[in-house]
Image (cartoon, rainbow, N blue to C red; front, top):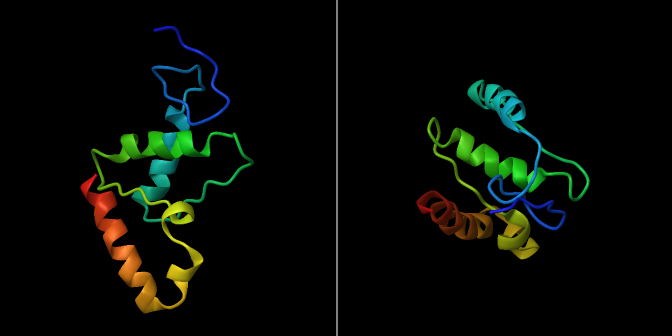
Amino acid sequence: MIKTFNITADCKPNLHYMVDLHSRLAKIKEYVDRGEYVTINRARQYGKTTTLRALSKYLEHAYYVISMDFQVQMSDAKFRNEHTFALHFNPLFWQGYMT
């Protein structure tokens, strides 16, 4: 399959031209190994989703990786209080764990 340039969604290494993320992923893993928080924030179309998906694969042999999308799966109403949050968070957590 011929690779193409992708400017509309996350990049997939087998389909799209993209930068080598290995050094970035290794650096992020250092933070994870130390138990530190990691934040990935940049402008749109900068590779955040691509990096997070690659990181998930990079870490899957050493960690249980669970992906959750709070923007899509959790509305403001679900954050109203701790009880409401827990009722909505728990099934999504397990869904992410079982995937």
